[in-house]
Image 1 (cartoon, rainbow, N blue to C red):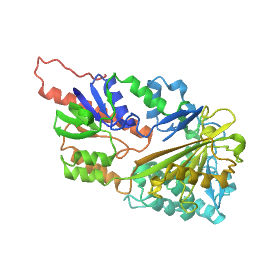
Image 2 (image 1 turned 45 degrees about the horizontal axis):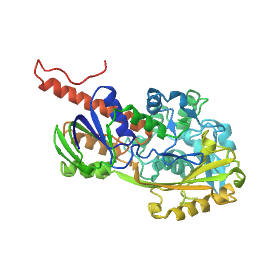
Image 3 (image 1 turned 90 degrees about the horizontal axis):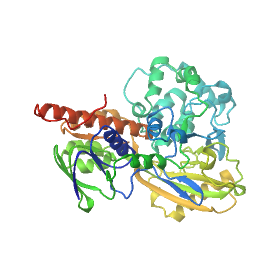
Amino acid sequence: MSAAVDVAVIGGGIAGLAAAYELTRRGVSCVVLEESGRAGGVILSERIDGFTIDAGPDALLIQKPAAIALCEELGLGERLVPTSLPRFAYILRDERLHVLPSGSVLGIPTRPGPFLATSLFSWRGKLRMGAERFIPPRADTADESIGSFMTRRFGIEATRYLAEPLLAGIHAGDVDRLSMKALFPRFLEAERKQGSLLEAFRRTAHARSTAEGAFKSLPGGLSEMTDALVAALPPGTIRVDAGVLGIAGAGPFEIEAAAGTRVSARAAILAVPAWAAADLLRGRDAALAALCGEIRYASAMTVALAFRREEVAHPLNGSGFVVPRVEAPRMLAASWLSSKWPYRAPAGRVLMRAFFGGMRDPDALQMSDAQAVDRAMEGLTPILGLRAQPLLARVYRWPRANAQHEVGHLDRLAAIEAALARHPGLFLTGSGFRGVGIPDCVADGRATARAALDWLHNRVDGKREANQPRTLHREP
C-alpha cells in the first residue's frame, strides 16, 4: 500500500494525534504511521465488568489548558468532570498515611495552619521549611536537580517526603537527576523574582484556587479523548501495525513501513520517543541521533485491583498516596480511581491502582502478572486493610515510556534543534523533547504541525510558478 501526502506523522500517541488533527483542520493531507495495533500511546482506558480503568495517565491538568481546550474542540467539553470531593492526597511515612497539607502547591505550603498541624513532618523539618523565606536566591543560573533545589531551599526532610515522591515521582524519575529548568521553571522564576517560594505561592494561592480542583477527566477514561481524535481524522489517516523501517530522501521523504506500506511525504513529523527517533535518524545524521539517544527513559507498571467495598477497611477518602523512596522502594504510589473520579466502579465496589518501576526499580517489569498482583497486595494490605483477594486484577506494562528530562536537558534540546535545522522538512515532537505531560504533548504536537505547515508554505511560495494554484490552506 502506498500513499502520497503533504505530511507523514510517525507515531500515533497523543502528540502525533494532536499534530495530525491540527494538520487536518488546516486542510493539509497527512497520514499517521503507528507501530502498535492501536493509536493513543500510553493513554488506554478499558471497561471491564462495570469498571473503567485508565491503564496509563488518568487526568488532565487544568492549569495547562491545551488538553482541556482540545476536548472542548472535539465536543467533549460537557463530559469533562473534576476530581471528586474530598480532594485529599496522602504521603506514606513510618507505615502511616499522612494528609498532604491543604493549600499546598505540589507540596509547597501556602497556608501556615494546615502546614503546622500536619503530622507529615517533624518539628525540626517544619522549622527548616519555614526558614525558606530567609534563604537568599541562588546567584548561579546553571541548571540543578530537583533534589539540589529543594534541599537548598527547604531542607533534606522536604526533599525526602515531598520532592522525591511528588515532584520526581510524577515523572517516575530520580530526584537527584531531574532538571528544575526543564520541569519546574516557575519554581525558579518564583525564587528569582520573589526570593522565596513560600511567599510567592502564598501571594498567588487565591488566584490558582478553583472549586473544580486541579484536574479533570472523562467518565469513560482518557481514551474518550484519543478516540474522538481518531474519529475527527479522515478515514484511512491512521495506519496501525505500521512501524517505520526507514526514511529516505529529503522532501519528498520516502518512508517504508511494515506490511508493505510506503508513504511519500513533503514533510515528516517524528512523534515518537527520543530513543525511537535516534533509531530512525542514525543513518541520516549520526550526531543528531546520538543527542536523541542521550535522553533517558524509565519503565513503569500499573496494577489495577477491584474489591467489594466492605473488603477494604480504609475509608478511601481522597485520591491516593505516594511512597517516598526512603519508606518502601518497591511501590511508587497508589490511587483510588473510584474515589478520585465518578463513574469508575459499580455501586458497592472500589477500584484502585498501584504503581511500580520508574528509575527507582528498573527491573519491575520483569515480574509476571501474578507476581505483580502479589506485590501490589503485599504493599497495599497493611496500609488499606484489604480483607480479600481482588475481584478483578489487571497488569499494564509501559516499557521505556517515561521521558527523563534530566539536568542539562534544555541545552541538549537546543543542540537537537540546531542539528535538526540541517534537515529541512523534518520535525520532532513528543514527551522526550519539550514537555512530558498530556497538555504539553498536545500543545507541542499542534505547534509542531503548524511549524511543518509554515515550512510547506514557505517552500511553495519559494518554488511555485506564478500561475500555479496554491494547494495548502492556512487559517487566517
